[in-house]
Image 1 (cartoon, rainbow, N blue to C red):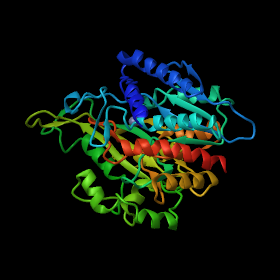
Image 2 (tube, helix red, strand yellow):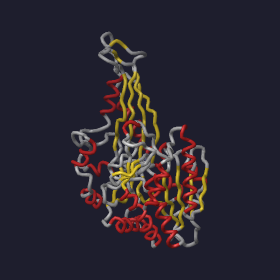
Image 3 (tube, protein in one colour):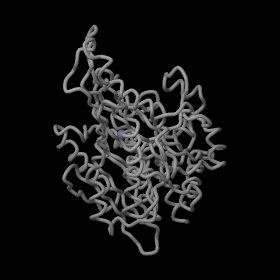
Image 4 (cartoon, rainbow, N blue to C red):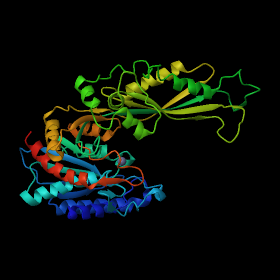
Amino acid sequence: MNRWLDELFELLRFPSISTDSRNKDDVQACAEWLAARMKSAGLESKIHPTPGHPVVIGRNKHEAGRLNVVVYGHYDVQPVDPLELWDTPPFDPVEKDGKIWARGATDNKGQFFAHLCGITETIEESGKLPVNLTMLLEGEEEIGSPSLRPFLEEHREDLACDVIVVSDTGMVAKGVPTLGYGLRGIACCEIAVSGPARDLHSGVYGGAVANPATAVAQLVASLHDGEGRVAVEGFYNDVVPLEDWEREMWGAVPGMTPDDVLGVTGSPSLSGEQGYSSAERLWARPTAEVNGIWGGYQGEGSKTVLPAEAFAKLSFRLVPNQDPAKVMEKVIAHLERHCPPGVKIAVDPGHDGQPYHTDPHSAFSKAAQAALKKTFGADPVLIREGGSIPIIQDFKEVLGADTLLLGLALPDCQIHSPNENFTIENFEGGIRLNRVLFEELAGC
Ligand SMILES: [Zn+2]
């Protein structure tokens, strides 16, 4: 383990922040380090330039008749601000209280590097891996992976595979192995409501002219009914209902009781669609959220104005089989229909991503569950995630393969925040998981 920890610390020292152009050379240097590291493990490695940051590929010698497995990870990281909230410098990793503290420790360097260490151990001990491996490491995940889909399309044949392994999600609680089999999709838009030609005196004109800020509030309020359901006409048409076993398993998942959710969020009470638990609301039900709402006077004191314009940013988390484009059409129709008289509305659709779902009872999923059980000594829980990782659906569309989401992050690992950390227990577990996983998958 000392050897693997030393190497992980080297990897964590690269400030590979993808969004900041000042770190471009650091991202490149990190890619070069990884290519060299894969080579020293006995893999053939190559750095592929893209219009953005490079993709690094590592492969063993592929043999006919064996299973083709892609292991995906990302070596770029989030920015570190606010720096003063870090207890130790983000790119100077330290080991303390059984954890590794650094930017990227969990998201995602620690997680994918555990796989690479497992791969290295297997090759050193048995001379070869039991599967045809392609390790695919990208440097743009934190900025939305703009180069990855074109890369997949361009290298479709080289990357052809039976199954994809990704450790970039979470365990529901410490010591509880977790297999993810679904992700929510997303559709976003911004609405602009306009009224009079300019801001008006609210005494001279208020009451005789429609107020765009009131209209935005009415539109936002029209998105839900009194039972927490999304009131957009036809919104639930394509939603796949929860299965009985899902409700049963999620009812017992650690970390998802009302107290857990209240504790993590600091919210005074739970809310949402009636008839569903928090886990069900988060993992299997679609939502409408207001991400921002503004307009009119925001300064100190009062200014009695009737604003000419008001705005809101909306996002919709989607579940199988909802289609983001179809949902956005319904949302726009709803907003236009509910727009009060006296104002004009313009809706600008933003980014979107398909939901993802795979069969948790497939042969590959079962192999992953067996590997999780052997590694962590407990039955894995099967969950979906509330968030969206659009590249997982890209993998399915371009490479035609399903992804096993084998998350090693813990709820308190503070990804994207100051004091990001990764437990040594899960780093070590990830290494063992890789070794058992390839064996189990090869038996499929
Ligand atoms: Zn991230």
